Length: 170
Image 1 (tube, rainbow, N blue to C red):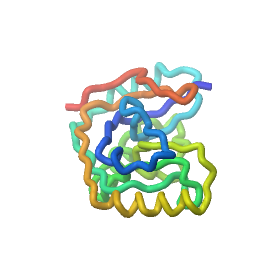
Image 2: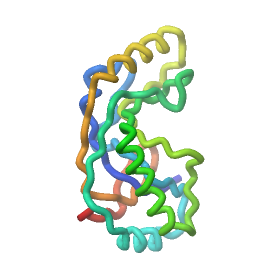
Image 3: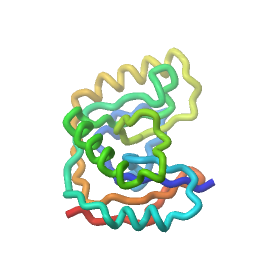
């Protein structure tokens, strides 16, 4: 089933070199940060119209370190984590945009700005936990910055994503 979300394409790459071999890198053109998750939507025309009304300036997101998702005990994904300053800015943007999309409830209980950069199918075991812990420690020395100049309505279907409609930020 096709689902939709509002977000940014974020080609974070500086962490790639430390990703353990049993993780598969997410293709750079699929790396994104979800601002609001809509889920299944019957008619995307209204969402697209509202997106066209959003006025936002270009900005830079900084990432320091990676973290396992959904949790330390189930590290299916490794994700780049926004630094506190970038996280706070993204939260403000999200609050403003949420007011414009009142009719479409965001499906996220908690907003954790991150970009998934690697995925594994391996079942969690002691070795995986040790390697992930070491990788997380190593990643704290890495800083990546990405300039954001577009916000997009993105569709997700069958494990891949594609933009439906994007606006250029000023």
